Structure formats: structure tokens, C-alpha cells
Image (cartoon, rainbow, N blue to C red; front, side, top):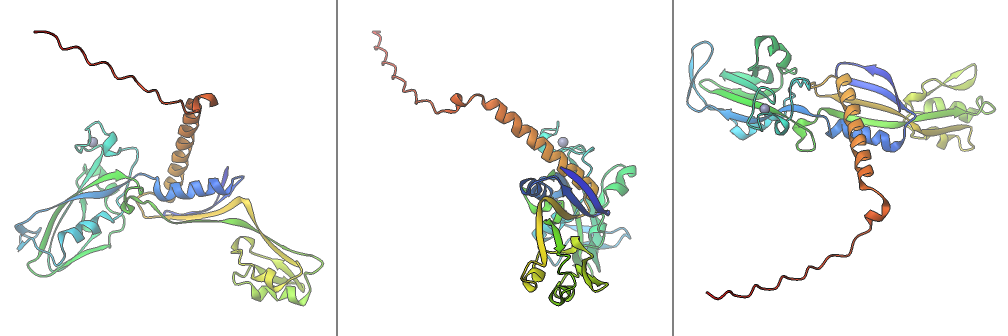
Length: 307
Ligand SMILES: [Zn+2]
């Protein structure tokens, strides 16, 4: 399996997967979607009572939304994730109680009139890490407050995967297609119906040069086959190469696209290794055959002792 990067932006990747198979391409897609661990807010504490904001104004801790809605919105905010610093809570040495190795604490204190945004969440970490764990998308609206309304929240982010909840999903728009192979028969390239393919193709794969149809953007082909339906005698052929795939995905900002791809390949490699070990441990085929159930004779009741 080889990977050739076409585009690698901060949150967006496009690459070619070569010498692979549909099963492997799908395994990579599913890993990107649901097996990457990331941090997301899982527990929210609301302070109830009078509040004082940063300017010393007093207000009540009340909002126009139910606390559950605010908590849900906070859960869906992408939280930056560093896999070198954090471990899943259930694997942590704290035994799941919560500690700086498995949780990030966020704090939010705002009073109206204002709109509370994701950027108002402040990470409670050491000053040198503060910028790193600040939410990357700062303008996701959470709630709008009017005069005398305020909100004071502490929220805890923990690690998880999208198998459990979509708030732990790192990648979106994960998709691939078979690499298109578009061929124009040289003997038919200047025929009228073949030349019309330039306008028939919705993806502008063809152009006409020197009175002949040529392929100018093979990768842009969506395999819709509008051209092969237009030219019925095989003057133009379109096939999908099932060993090469054009892959693309985006991330929500908790990982960079490069980190997501690296981590997905790592997870896939570890799962394959684990699977191979399990197969090896099964042993010879004869041991797989079900054994007849052993029926144990009930032990005879002990004779009552004379007292
Ligand atoms: Zn811990």
C-alpha cells in the first residue's frame, strides 16, 4: 500500500492510495471515521446562584436555554487533542477518577448582554499550554444572554472514539473513488460524436486539440459514463482501477489532516497485528472442532452423620 499526497492542508487532505484493494481502502475510511481517539467535553458543571463578571457586574446564573442543550453544544465543540500528553481515562493510572493525564478542564464565565462563543472557553492548564488547548474554532455560538443573565461553567474533556459518540469523531467527508482510467480510441478521436464528449462530460474531463478529442483531467472523472453512453461503439472507454483509489477527508480541527492520516495508519497497523496474533493463537484446525459436552455425574449426597 503506497500513499501519494496530492493536497495536505491544515484540515483537508487529498491523496492517492496505490497497490491496494477495495477492502483496504474501506478499512482506512472506517478507521478515519470512527477509530481515532480525541478529546471532547463529557462532563459539564453549572454554577447556580449570583454571579459577578470580569467587570464586577452582578447578575443571575440563568440562560434562555436548558442546561442540557448548552452541555450538548459544548460536547460538540472540537477540542484540540495531543495524543502524546493524554491517555483514555479507563487506561489512566488514576483509575478513571480524572487527572491532568486524562482530562482537560475548561472554564467559562460570561454575563449578558452578549453571545457566548466557543472561544470563551478557557483551558485550565499551565500558561505555556494555554494557547495550544484553546478551542481552534472560536466563533461557534453557544447561547445568547440578555441583561442580568449569566453563565458560569466548568467542563471536563476526556478522550474517546466515535464508536461511542459522534462528538469524538475527528474526520468528516471521508470518501474515495476508484481511480478513473479514461481512454479515447485514436482511430475515432476526430469523429463528430466523439468530439461532442467535450460538452457531454459534466466534469470537463475532455478537450478538443487539433480536431481530436483528448483527455485533460482524468482524475476529475466521476465515472458517470455520460461519454460512453453518448459514444456507443467503444470510441471512448471509462473504467475504474480497483487497486488505486482517490481519497479525501477533512478534520474538525482537533487534529491536523496529516496527524489524522498518520494516526489512522497506526491504528490500522496495530489492529492488523492484533488480528494476526489472535489467528496464530487459535492453533491447529483440529482444536477448532467442537468437543462433546462433558456431563458431570452429580456427586452423591453425603450420608448424614450421626450426632
Ligand atoms: Zn487520569
